[in-house]
Image (cartoon, rainbow, N blue to C red):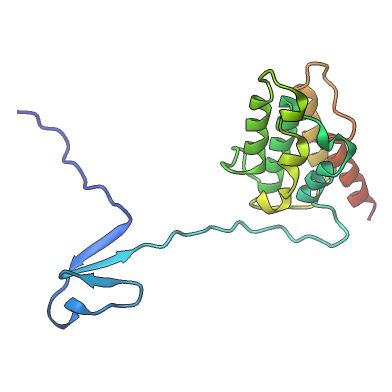
Length: 184
């Protein structure tokens, strides 16, 4: 006879309890008693990450990313170097080293992979497609520092076969934002 570990029942997110007496047919708030069982559904919890205090004169990482979406380079197809720069920027804004599912860096990485497929440039995902609304996609945001800009520029250059950044691209926008913030 096999003696494996006992299996724990899977939790579906709903809780049920036996109800008795006068409570057996009454709704209780967001919970309901159905056929002598007390049923409740746990609500999903949204976790908000604190955003650093931002002086109105300082340019944030999210704003710098959105500025790239408005630049001349915005209609350029997303490449691996762009995705790496965006991931570095998101990481610096949120303080998290992993790529956030559904975030701007995740979208950029997916776009860069899809853009490797042979198809006309018009059919490829552009920087503007990924970076428009970047401020809303970041879990947290902070003012751009020189160190942030350097990290993003390095990530972009390292992932470019020519080891250069794109004029008007993510790295250049971050560097310009850091300079403007530093002057204030």
